[in-house]
Amino acid sequence: MLRLENVSLEIGEKKILDDINFELKKNTKLMVIGHNGAGKSSLAKAITQNIKYKGKIYFENKDLQYMKATERAKAIGYLMQTNYIEYPFTVEEIVSFGRYPYRKGILDTQSELDKKMIDSAIETMEIENIRTRSANFLSGGELQKVFLAQVLAQDPKILILDEVTNHLDISIQEKIFSLIDSWVKKGDRAVISIVHDLTLAKLFSDNILLLQKGKIVAEGKASQIFKEENINKAYNFDVISWMKKRAKIWIE
Ligand SMILES: Nc1ncnc2c1ncn2[C@@H]1O[C@H](COP(=O)(O)OP(=O)(O)OP(=O)(O)O)[C@@H](O)[C@H]1O
Image (tube, rainbow, N blue to C red; front, side, top):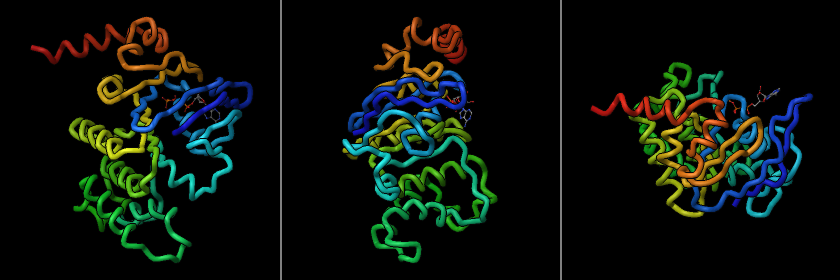
């Protein structure tokens, strides 16, 4: 579905992404993990064409660089790590922006399908109660749900979610990843989630990419990635002992 070939990115002297190669298959949930500054968000920006890179990125064998912006938006939906809105759009308006790739022009009216997708995204994210409210006065968690609803309304084939559970309380975190599970199960779709929470990565991934200083240092199922020799080295920290210690305090 998505293929990266020798993707590299340098800013000044610094190598941000270093010869990245991987393939994202249909019906897969891929999690990207790694230390702060490992290159996770830069990888998301390269895939979504928000940053210049060397190498090739293909969506269904089409070079993403040469796809029209609207075609790319139908292929890939991107929820950035930080989102803010300056103009006081309503929640419904923000969600409806997800449908722009399907309109003929800025003045084109919403189709029945647009309305259906907007309603469905609002219902899925359980934000009906704030539908007519201005986004300027929403809490961080509410705003995050609104942006996720927008990207669901966009109905892409691949979702790229950068720290999607930012601002969301623990009960919503579980819900969001279960929802992403169901979204992928609809078929012919895939998701790439960048997460810091290694428990979420273990629970909700089919595959994991472990990045360290812009390089993929391990790739595979959670059972392979969370081996001490991989994970402790990549974080330069005894991750496994720390995770065990954390888990232990909740077991009586
Ligand atoms: N436009 C830029 N100019 C200079 N350096 C940049 C730029 N964008 C990213 N970087 C650097 O590239 C490195 C990787 O950044 P990136 O945001 O991709 O990391 P990350 O793995 O997502 O980190 P975090 O977990 O902290 O969000 C960092 O050292 C960052 O400072």
